[in-house]
Image (cartoon, rainbow, N blue to C red):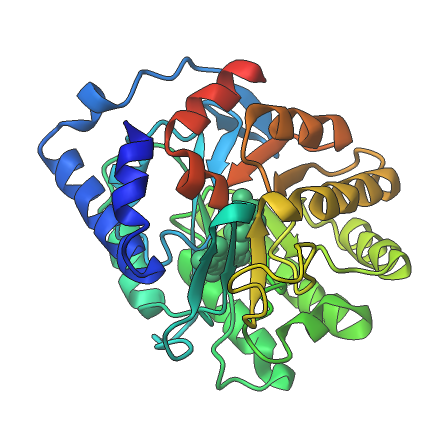
Length: 335
Ligand SMILES: Cc1cc2nc3c(=O)[nH]c(=O)nc-3n(C[C@H](O)[C@H](O)[C@H](O)COP(=O)(O)O)c2cc1C
């Protein structure tokens, strides 16, 4: 059935199709149709970072930036859902068009630029959510905030989402906010993570609840940068790593339609690069903190490769667009 729906949706502009799909899903949820349309997914519980996940397949950040569709997306059977990236203040993101399907390649290029309704809106949404699915909240900085002040935005984000999140993701790896990725390296990274760690510890004692904090990284890191990031993660006792975000490289044929658009590439062609990054991080981390895999999973065998490379959990985004919600069940069964 999904291939027929996809055929219709792919006639629309990519961002329009995204909105139509999510709105339709919400209506189906409200009419209580989802249990009839979506097969029951067997529980496959896994405990990671002290959190009990009902299954190891999550939704990656960026699909539900404002947590407007959390309940409906939970109805698809995800073991966890990561909402955001949310920035302190609402922002419109980059001019449209900014989302492109590379159909032949089962890939997507996006340069959305953290379009979102801001922290206050997201908090209202997660406060009123009905579903109990594990919730990750992914935080970022506003475009207008200079890198020297980035920490202020991340501290605001962590403080605001802490009471509602099961885990918090610090996103320094989007290619669509100018300069953001510079914060992934060296002193800027250490300073940022150090202050966030201090804040996390004080929030844990205020709320009497420890909420793990993970770092989301790009797949485009040199080997020496990877070992530097790992040193920072281990010495500052960061709880986990999400590998990876989209790539600025183009591991696709030269003549691919939309292949030259600016932005981050996701989907099938990202799979090798992103999995290599997991292997490298895993070899340095030695299993001391868990890795959540994202990047190029379009079939169950890909998810297995991520686990073999050292991941504990997986997330999907582009694969869901190309394969539909059955992919969740298929991966859960295969794992
Ligand atoms: C349209 C789009 C928007 C995204 N927005 C975000 C975002 O706001 N924050 C983030 O951390 N990752 C974002 N991502 C990256 C995904 O979470 C994921 O890391 C990446 O797409 C690789 O997974 P995939 O190959 O399964 O899509 C976005 C991806 C896409 C395609």
